[in-house]
Length: 223
Ligand SMILES: [Zn+2]
Image (cartoon, rainbow, N blue to C red):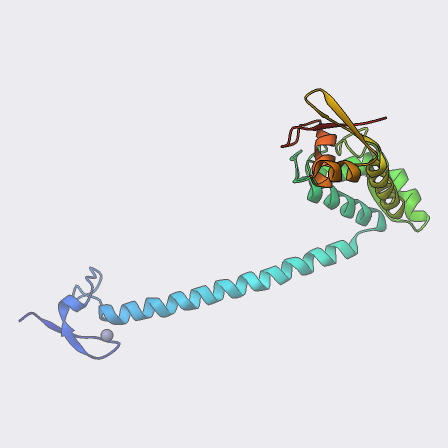
């Protein structure tokens, strides 16, 4: 029968093999049995996880609070810049990446967009703010990208009005559907979609991109 050793934690006498080797200990074994050491680590781990979770929670609130305070400390001018830059980068992805709607941002990442707006539209932004309006970015050609030359800063409500106008105008424009050299003319996108048994959005998509839909039609505006 091998040597026995008493665990300093649970007080049980166990065969020495139940104690891990430990060169720094006089006996060459740890004072606590393997079972007790395992339990200790398990509890420690739970404690550590709990702490990490708490830390990230605290930190998250901290971050949100920090952002809020920072935003509130900005001047109205910088706030407008902040909102517009986030809008562009959120809709398009940063660094010229296409989003799901195919809008590309050529202006760069968030800080670059901010700098671009300050440099090129500073006076427009200030003028709108002075009139109590909300500056927002408008793409001059709505089918093109967020890029230099295709951007202006106008009032947010005006921008929304223009947006719905463009949508209405496009929707009511005559559409020619072309397949195998034959053309069919429709009074609007929705007439076209109904006539061909496809979705409005399909017609809009292929009309905009000049591509051919699954059932073989390509589309152009009549005028
Ligand atoms: Zn023990």
